[in-house]
Length: 600
Image 1: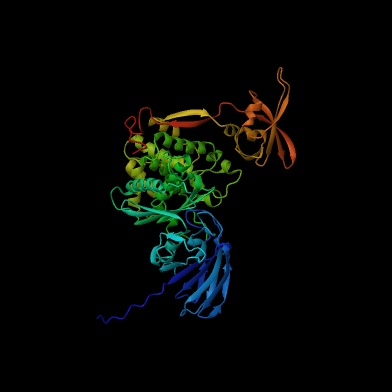
Image 2: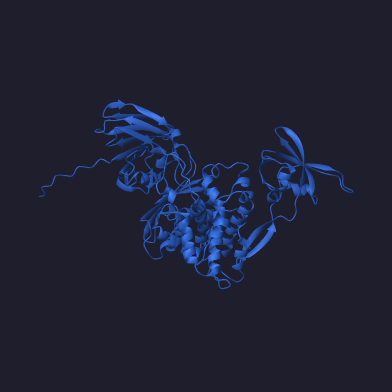
């Protein structure tokens, strides 16, 4: 017999017990235990979540914060909106209890009701200052009123039940914060890609949901992404969990190191018996591709400013055009390379991106580098003037990637694919700077790209899209714009009312004096030879050409703050948008000696 004594179970340095306390009341309770607190222990809750660049003030949902050591309650002092100080005996464990309201059905925060539970630890788990690098343990209890619930997370399991509830561990607070948790009676499936086990869970799906197809298509995306970054070599991660919440109306995703949280419209899920992918399902696959590409591009290869997150305030970088924009370029491209869309489908998606950028006057006002820096105050807080004053680092960033890729392929030395892989190796899958990107471009491209960086990234001049696309044999067609774009406005239409939401700078609508918030009631037409003057009520914008006919000048009748205004409106002619078509007789392979693009 061994003479060794049984080992004593070690108490984690920091442990959280999460209880779904009230499903009807949407409330979690949290018990935090700090095994060895500081004499003056500071605790705080993040004000933002990495990947979503807005201060969201998660602490506003916390209440009832109490502290004790042993059986004795001790004072806790709130220092600011999200920070608490506690004077402790360092030789005794500190226990802090509090409740958190969870009723935000997004990928960013926390949700709890009778059907489903979800949380990001950044919304529930107070950070223990001074012990961020210590091991953390998370224990999640199953609600008594939901015996059929399961739990899914990418955290490392400890003692867990077959349904997933129990104890999980994280190496540090950063790993914990980066690991969302899904609970409920969700659908679950698994597949292997690149030797890595992947799990996909879907909450809220209807009976028509085709889980087998979703798994098969996602597997193709993951295998393509892994080959992109590593070829036949071992990938950067050893596990991955997709968490998809299907709702009546919603769309979005948030990347994590070993998982992603997604939300989509229920109608966009693949359906049994339908062989053809709907437009909505293709959009969902693009979202999956986007968030999975982030496994490398932002969660590992990331801005040097994000080497260590500061959870207490904004973390600024000018590189979101690279990390979000280039990811947006590759998300659709990897769908094509996975054979989930054909050439025509790929060019439809690319056309949409180009027209979105070209229809935003803000591209002449703000560079993508500036847009990246200003994300905290502009991108996530859009208003009626947003299209006029800013540009999306997602869409224009994707076009910047396109321009670099086509330029490199046209010159024949390298491709953007090779630049991305070399950048990964140069930075060892870690923090990078713009200088790193420029250096790799120059090294592989055989020349300086300072001019392109100044113009495309830090400038506001038009991108040379048409020249670069046509050099690859892509056909660029001009087609008539939709009426809203021709006039330069965006409207909402409901109950027979046309309400102006956005007026684009320099447009016919702006020249006429239309303003966001105006209700466009009708139009007046002046008398012409043989035709008397007339007036018509508009119930939708597309009524305008019906009543105006060939007239190019009308009077817009609008209500503004209950006042009726008559605004002279000139209806432009000749407004166009782009439509891209693949090269004649090709399947996106080599054109005119250039390197193949985009399918390979």
